Length: 309
Image 1 (spheres, rainbow, N blue to C red):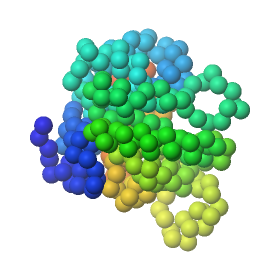
Image 2 (spheres, helix red, strand yellow):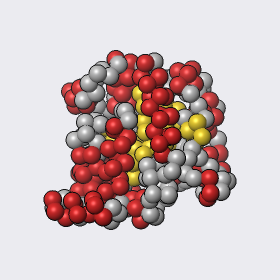
Image 3 (cartoon, rainbow, N blue to C red):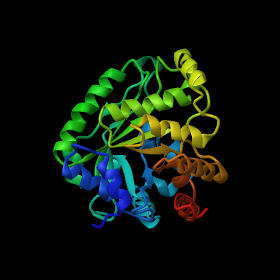
């Protein structure tokens, strides 16, 4: 597989990493419509486990079929398709080699009580990723949860094993739990902190949410004000989160969240592009729409990241 100078510069930021991991990152960055640009669009479909099947797939019943999501990601020319073990296994043979996959190795669910703490169960292994030919493992951490330290330790060990076996690691870093207020889940200081934590524990690709201009921590607010950190626009907040990801030395993609109107999706992508982010990991905003609409949206998102829209 060929590469570009832009991708070579990105891979050079991963000093000390194994050649196998760099090969998988190159695979992600050199696939689909955005190949070679340093940008990525990833389709994540873990919502059936996280939120339940009807909440996830009833708006577009074709989505109940795991093959639908493979085909959507392939036909849209995306960089990768991410899903839990069962979803990937259900199409791994039919679609082998047609698109890089990311095996989501832990999951939460909506049936647990609030008293359980914010945590996720480990539901797949590095060996599962190898068996399925996945380019990377995916893992969620919840900075701010009482269970966060355990989650950090789990992914550090899994990431070490994955790197030794030539598999990259994508970390979903989503602040939530006992130490985080509801507005704080998307506060800019907390989002940047989440990116920093993911980078520090070894993420090759970091997934975070787009943030608001709210600053949750009083100590952080003093610094933001004293240093005049620009958080006024979404692009500025993306830029700040990229700073937190080792000065932009780590790939950062931003989640799409719940389904919203098309113009909001496109505005988010432009802010990510203009702020120097690496792209979008967008699920419900695409697979909950009819296939034709989803393909049209994903094509326009690719054009936005190429600077054409």
